[in-house]
Length: 108
Image (tube, rainbow, N blue to C red; front, side, top):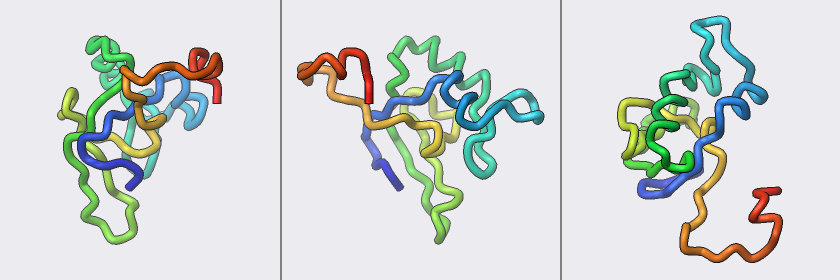
């Protein structure tokens, strides 16, 4: 598991996931990892939250032995299962000052 409960994480945008994984012929969603799909409904709900794509991990399912079927539940959108492949990174603390111009542009 890359993240833990209470971590704030940034979710990848639809276009980013589409570029990385492509659109599935099954329902027009994005198959990210094993049987986890990023759906148009997930994207819509994230946009409606107006949260800058930052969600809080509320629960982690890691019952499997090999790590292949773990998923996260997010406090703000508990209906969905989220995989590591849908998460871009840990979200920075909003109070943390920007230290260089590359952070302003989010260039890595």
